[in-house]
Length: 244
Image (cartoon, rainbow, N blue to C red; front, side, top):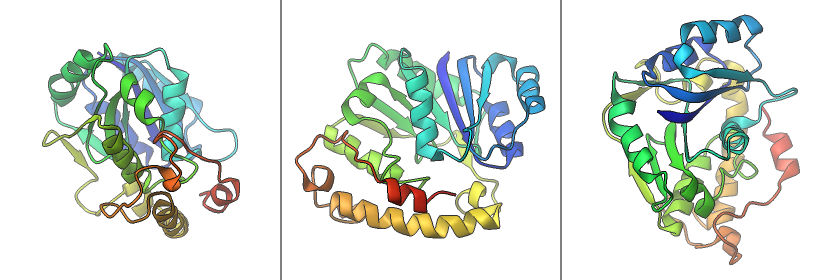
């Protein structure tokens, strides 16, 4: 069983439904974070009817999107008593049996906390246990908001912390075969425009935090500060300018 499934969704609820349909194992609790505030009570009822094994709750931020990393963090902190979590982007689809065969056994074996572990598919989905969060921290959704470079940042922090990081092979897919990259962005001209702005700011934030682009990092602590890898710092003005 998957203890918690966190499903951030900004748009393309049809893809969210497709992703949930591909989760063919029992889930203790599913938290759908409706970042685009597109879903209604009818959608919530439909989720319960169509996916009863997922035990879904739908939550929408009251004003604006909390971002991809923010949704992940929210899901983890709302269920902090659990041993591990799975988050999945809405434009991911799993092949039949993949999660039960390749993900659940490994994460259940790691739930005692002896080995900090991340199993992932390019951060479009990931399973992470409490030991990893304890060492690496949550997603840095101050520096990298609402999405992009948060994945590079978490991977580099995990590398510095020396935790087990496994990029998973076949058994899942991202997108629909017609567009490269995120369907969330490619499906919405407004999101494309907003992402152009936030992506460049996040790129600059990554270089400031680690001294170079992904794969060319110089610093071994955030902002060359000597602080632990789990440290983040507020960027209120930057977050405001990057809001979608």
